[in-house]
Image (cartoon, rainbow, N blue to C red; front, side):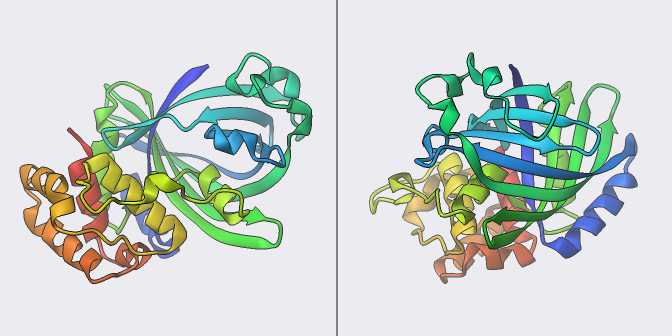
Length: 287
Protein backbone atom coordinates (compact mmCIF):
# COMPACT_ATOMS: atom_id res chain seq x y z
CA UNK A 1 0.00 0.00 0.00
CA UNK A 2 1.16 3.53 -0.77
CA UNK A 3 -0.18 7.05 -0.30
CA UNK A 4 -1.04 9.07 -3.40
CA UNK A 5 -1.08 12.88 -3.26
CA UNK A 6 -2.36 14.71 -6.33
CA UNK A 7 -4.24 17.76 -7.57
CA UNK A 8 -6.70 17.17 -10.38
CA UNK A 9 -7.90 19.90 -12.72
CA UNK A 10 -10.63 19.63 -15.35
CA UNK A 11 -10.14 21.66 -18.53
CA UNK A 12 -11.92 22.26 -21.79
CA UNK A 13 -10.46 20.11 -24.61
CA UNK A 14 -9.10 23.11 -26.51
CA UNK A 15 -7.09 24.20 -23.47
CA UNK A 16 -5.22 20.91 -22.97
CA UNK A 17 -2.75 21.59 -25.79
CA UNK A 18 -2.09 25.09 -24.51
CA UNK A 19 -1.51 23.70 -21.01
CA UNK A 20 0.96 21.13 -22.34
CA UNK A 21 2.84 23.72 -24.40
CA UNK A 22 3.14 26.06 -21.42
CA UNK A 23 4.35 23.30 -19.09
CA UNK A 24 7.08 22.24 -21.50
CA UNK A 25 8.42 25.79 -21.64
CA UNK A 26 9.01 25.90 -17.88
CA UNK A 27 12.46 25.29 -16.37
CA UNK A 28 12.98 21.81 -14.95
CA UNK A 29 10.36 20.11 -17.12
CA UNK A 30 10.70 17.38 -19.71
CA UNK A 31 8.18 15.45 -21.76
CA UNK A 32 7.67 11.82 -20.84
CA UNK A 33 5.99 8.93 -22.59
CA UNK A 34 2.68 9.19 -24.40
CA UNK A 35 0.38 6.25 -23.73
CA UNK A 36 -3.10 5.08 -24.61
CA UNK A 37 -4.69 3.80 -21.39
CA UNK A 38 -7.74 1.54 -21.20
CA UNK A 39 -9.16 1.24 -17.70
CA UNK A 40 -11.94 -1.14 -16.68
CA UNK A 41 -13.59 -0.50 -13.31
CA UNK A 42 -15.22 -3.27 -11.32
CA UNK A 43 -17.97 -3.47 -8.71
CA UNK A 44 -20.79 -5.75 -7.64
CA UNK A 45 -24.29 -5.44 -9.06
CA UNK A 46 -25.33 -3.73 -5.82
CA UNK A 47 -22.35 -1.32 -5.98
CA UNK A 48 -20.75 -2.45 -2.73
CA UNK A 49 -17.42 -0.80 -3.57
CA UNK A 50 -19.00 2.50 -4.53
CA UNK A 51 -20.85 2.61 -1.21
CA UNK A 52 -17.50 2.20 0.55
CA UNK A 53 -15.99 4.91 -1.70
CA UNK A 54 -13.48 2.46 -3.14
CA UNK A 55 -12.40 2.28 -6.78
CA UNK A 56 -11.06 -0.92 -8.34
CA UNK A 57 -9.71 -1.09 -11.87
CA UNK A 58 -7.49 -3.01 -14.26
CA UNK A 59 -5.46 -0.81 -16.61
CA UNK A 60 -4.17 -1.84 -20.01
CA UNK A 61 -1.13 0.42 -20.43
CA UNK A 62 -0.08 -1.08 -23.76
CA UNK A 63 3.02 -2.91 -22.59
CA UNK A 64 1.67 -4.10 -19.24
CA UNK A 65 -1.47 -4.57 -17.15
CA UNK A 66 -1.89 -3.02 -13.70
CA UNK A 67 -4.59 -3.73 -11.12
CA UNK A 68 -5.25 -0.79 -8.78
CA UNK A 69 -7.38 -0.22 -5.71
CA UNK A 70 -7.94 3.30 -4.36
CA UNK A 71 -9.82 4.76 -1.42
CA UNK A 72 -11.59 8.11 -1.65
CA UNK A 73 -9.20 9.53 0.94
CA UNK A 74 -9.28 13.14 2.04
CA UNK A 75 -8.78 16.62 0.65
CA UNK A 76 -5.66 18.38 1.97
CA UNK A 77 -4.53 21.85 0.83
CA UNK A 78 -6.06 21.48 -2.60
CA UNK A 79 -4.82 17.91 -3.11
CA UNK A 80 -6.34 14.46 -2.79
CA UNK A 81 -4.59 12.15 -0.34
CA UNK A 82 -5.56 8.52 -0.92
CA UNK A 83 -4.46 5.05 -0.03
CA UNK A 84 -3.53 3.03 -3.08
CA UNK A 85 -2.73 -0.62 -3.74
CA UNK A 86 -1.17 -1.54 -7.08
CA UNK A 87 -0.18 -4.89 -8.58
CA UNK A 88 1.16 -6.00 -11.97
CA UNK A 89 -1.14 -8.63 -13.48
CA UNK A 90 -0.64 -10.85 -16.54
CA UNK A 91 -3.69 -9.70 -18.48
CA UNK A 92 -6.93 -7.71 -18.52
CA UNK A 93 -8.78 -10.07 -16.17
CA UNK A 94 -9.33 -9.06 -12.55
CA UNK A 95 -7.27 -11.06 -10.04
CA UNK A 96 -9.53 -11.26 -6.98
CA UNK A 97 -6.91 -13.16 -4.96
CA UNK A 98 -4.88 -9.95 -4.69
CA UNK A 99 -7.74 -8.25 -2.85
CA UNK A 100 -7.92 -10.56 0.15
CA UNK A 101 -5.86 -8.35 2.48
CA UNK A 102 -7.35 -5.02 1.37
CA UNK A 103 -10.54 -3.17 2.35
CA UNK A 104 -12.31 -4.88 -0.56
CA UNK A 105 -11.62 -8.29 0.92
CA UNK A 106 -13.71 -7.48 3.98
CA UNK A 107 -17.45 -7.77 3.55
CA UNK A 108 -17.54 -7.86 -0.27
CA UNK A 109 -18.36 -10.92 -2.37
CA UNK A 110 -15.27 -10.95 -4.58
CA UNK A 111 -16.82 -13.48 -6.93
CA UNK A 112 -19.59 -10.98 -7.69
CA UNK A 113 -17.26 -8.28 -9.03
CA UNK A 114 -18.00 -7.35 -12.64
CA UNK A 115 -17.14 -4.56 -15.12
CA UNK A 116 -19.18 -1.38 -14.62
CA UNK A 117 -17.56 1.27 -16.84
CA UNK A 118 -14.33 2.23 -18.57
CA UNK A 119 -12.17 5.34 -18.71
CA UNK A 120 -10.18 5.36 -21.94
CA UNK A 121 -7.80 8.17 -22.75
CA UNK A 122 -4.48 9.25 -24.13
CA UNK A 123 -2.05 10.29 -21.42
CA UNK A 124 0.83 12.65 -22.06
CA UNK A 125 3.29 13.13 -19.22
CA UNK A 126 5.46 16.05 -18.21
CA UNK A 127 7.99 15.43 -15.45
CA UNK A 128 8.75 18.43 -13.24
CA UNK A 129 11.96 18.49 -11.18
CA UNK A 130 12.99 21.68 -9.40
CA UNK A 131 15.90 20.05 -7.61
CA UNK A 132 13.99 19.35 -4.40
CA UNK A 133 10.56 18.18 -5.56
CA UNK A 134 9.60 15.79 -8.36
CA UNK A 135 6.07 15.97 -9.78
CA UNK A 136 4.47 13.93 -12.53
CA UNK A 137 2.00 15.97 -14.54
CA UNK A 138 -0.43 13.86 -16.57
CA UNK A 139 -2.50 15.42 -19.36
CA UNK A 140 -5.43 13.10 -20.09
CA UNK A 141 -7.77 13.37 -23.07
CA UNK A 142 -10.41 10.76 -23.83
CA UNK A 143 -13.78 9.55 -22.63
CA UNK A 144 -15.70 7.63 -20.00
CA UNK A 145 -17.86 4.79 -21.32
CA UNK A 146 -20.72 3.08 -19.49
CA UNK A 147 -22.74 0.84 -21.79
CA UNK A 148 -23.99 3.06 -24.61
CA UNK A 149 -23.36 6.26 -22.63
CA UNK A 150 -20.24 8.34 -23.09
CA UNK A 151 -18.86 11.59 -21.75
CA UNK A 152 -15.60 13.45 -22.41
CA UNK A 153 -12.63 13.28 -20.06
CA UNK A 154 -10.14 16.15 -20.13
CA UNK A 155 -7.89 16.52 -17.10
CA UNK A 156 -4.50 17.66 -15.89
CA UNK A 157 -3.17 15.90 -12.79
CA UNK A 158 -0.18 16.94 -10.71
CA UNK A 159 1.03 13.97 -8.64
CA UNK A 160 3.80 14.21 -6.06
CA UNK A 161 6.59 11.70 -6.59
CA UNK A 162 9.00 13.09 -3.99
CA UNK A 163 9.62 16.26 -2.02
CA UNK A 164 7.31 19.06 -0.92
CA UNK A 165 3.59 18.46 -1.48
CA UNK A 166 2.97 22.20 -1.38
CA UNK A 167 4.56 22.48 -4.81
CA UNK A 168 1.52 20.77 -6.33
CA UNK A 169 -0.58 23.81 -5.49
CA UNK A 170 2.15 26.13 -6.77
CA UNK A 171 2.09 24.48 -10.20
CA UNK A 172 -1.69 24.28 -10.34
CA UNK A 173 -1.98 27.98 -9.56
CA UNK A 174 0.62 28.85 -12.17
CA UNK A 175 -1.27 26.86 -14.80
CA UNK A 176 -4.54 28.56 -13.81
CA UNK A 177 -3.00 31.88 -14.85
CA UNK A 178 -2.49 30.49 -18.36
CA UNK A 179 -5.71 28.59 -19.11
CA UNK A 180 -9.13 28.18 -17.44
CA UNK A 181 -9.09 25.25 -15.00
CA UNK A 182 -11.48 23.70 -12.51
CA UNK A 183 -10.21 22.17 -9.26
CA UNK A 184 -12.18 18.93 -9.34
CA UNK A 185 -12.76 16.87 -6.21
CA UNK A 186 -14.74 14.31 -8.22
CA UNK A 187 -12.54 11.41 -9.28
CA UNK A 188 -12.58 9.62 -12.62
CA UNK A 189 -14.23 6.70 -10.84
CA UNK A 190 -17.01 8.88 -9.41
CA UNK A 191 -17.61 10.33 -12.87
CA UNK A 192 -17.86 6.81 -14.26
CA UNK A 193 -20.27 5.66 -11.58
CA UNK A 194 -22.43 8.73 -12.20
CA UNK A 195 -22.48 8.07 -15.94
CA UNK A 196 -23.40 4.43 -15.31
CA UNK A 197 -26.32 5.52 -13.15
CA UNK A 198 -24.83 3.88 -10.06
CA UNK A 199 -23.63 6.94 -8.16
CA UNK A 200 -25.81 9.89 -7.27
CA UNK A 201 -24.89 12.69 -4.88
CA UNK A 202 -26.44 12.01 -1.49
CA UNK A 203 -27.75 13.96 1.45
CA UNK A 204 -24.30 15.40 2.14
CA UNK A 205 -24.80 17.67 -0.88
CA UNK A 206 -27.88 19.35 0.61
CA UNK A 207 -27.02 22.77 2.02
CA UNK A 208 -28.96 23.71 5.12
CA UNK A 209 -30.47 27.20 5.24
CA UNK A 210 -28.47 28.10 8.34
CA UNK A 211 -25.30 26.30 7.24
CA UNK A 212 -22.07 28.23 6.82
CA UNK A 213 -19.80 26.50 4.32
CA UNK A 214 -16.13 26.02 5.07
CA UNK A 215 -13.70 26.02 2.17
CA UNK A 216 -13.51 22.25 1.68
CA UNK A 217 -17.28 21.87 1.66
CA UNK A 218 -17.63 24.74 -0.80
CA UNK A 219 -15.09 23.14 -3.12
CA UNK A 220 -16.80 19.77 -2.79
CA UNK A 221 -20.23 21.21 -3.60
CA UNK A 222 -18.80 22.99 -6.63
CA UNK A 223 -17.46 19.65 -7.87
CA UNK A 224 -20.81 17.95 -7.37
CA UNK A 225 -22.54 20.76 -9.28
CA UNK A 226 -19.98 20.33 -12.06
CA UNK A 227 -20.67 16.58 -12.15
CA UNK A 228 -24.45 16.96 -12.29
CA UNK A 229 -24.46 19.94 -14.65
CA UNK A 230 -26.29 22.10 -12.12
CA UNK A 231 -25.77 25.43 -10.42
CA UNK A 232 -24.77 25.91 -6.79
CA UNK A 233 -27.26 28.14 -5.03
CA UNK A 234 -25.81 29.63 -1.85
CA UNK A 235 -26.28 32.93 -0.07
CA UNK A 236 -23.67 35.48 0.95
CA UNK A 237 -24.12 34.54 4.61
CA UNK A 238 -23.45 30.88 3.81
CA UNK A 239 -20.17 31.87 2.16
CA UNK A 240 -18.81 34.00 5.01
CA UNK A 241 -15.89 31.67 5.72
CA UNK A 242 -15.07 31.33 2.03
CA UNK A 243 -15.15 35.11 1.61
CA UNK A 244 -12.82 35.52 4.58
CA UNK A 245 -10.37 32.98 3.16
CA UNK A 246 -10.45 34.70 -0.22
CA UNK A 247 -9.75 38.01 1.49
CA UNK A 248 -6.78 36.52 3.33
CA UNK A 249 -5.46 35.28 -0.02
CA UNK A 250 -5.84 38.75 -1.54
CA UNK A 251 -8.65 37.62 -3.83
CA UNK A 252 -11.69 39.42 -2.39
CA UNK A 253 -12.58 40.93 -5.77
CA UNK A 254 -12.26 37.56 -7.48
CA UNK A 255 -14.52 35.99 -4.85
CA UNK A 256 -17.11 38.71 -5.44
CA UNK A 257 -17.17 38.01 -9.18
CA UNK A 258 -17.63 34.27 -8.66
CA UNK A 259 -20.23 34.74 -5.92
CA UNK A 260 -22.29 36.99 -8.18
CA UNK A 261 -22.16 34.44 -11.00
CA UNK A 262 -23.28 31.68 -8.65
CA UNK A 263 -25.99 33.91 -7.22
CA UNK A 264 -27.30 34.53 -10.73
CA UNK A 265 -27.83 30.78 -11.08
CA UNK A 266 -25.17 30.07 -13.67
CA UNK A 267 -24.38 26.34 -13.93
CA UNK A 268 -20.90 25.62 -12.63
CA UNK A 269 -19.81 24.09 -15.94
CA UNK A 270 -20.55 27.38 -17.71
CA UNK A 271 -18.16 29.18 -15.39
CA UNK A 272 -15.23 27.09 -16.64
CA UNK A 273 -14.92 29.20 -19.78
CA UNK A 274 -13.38 32.03 -17.74
CA UNK A 275 -10.40 31.78 -15.42
CA UNK A 276 -12.08 33.28 -12.36
CA UNK A 277 -13.55 30.13 -10.80
CA UNK A 278 -10.42 27.99 -11.03
CA UNK A 279 -8.19 30.79 -9.80
CA UNK A 280 -10.47 31.35 -6.81
CA UNK A 281 -10.61 27.63 -6.00
CA UNK A 282 -6.84 27.34 -5.98
CA UNK A 283 -6.37 30.58 -4.05
CA UNK A 284 -8.53 29.39 -1.16
CA UNK A 285 -7.53 25.70 -1.26
CA UNK A 286 -4.22 26.07 0.57
CA UNK A 287 -3.60 27.00 4.16
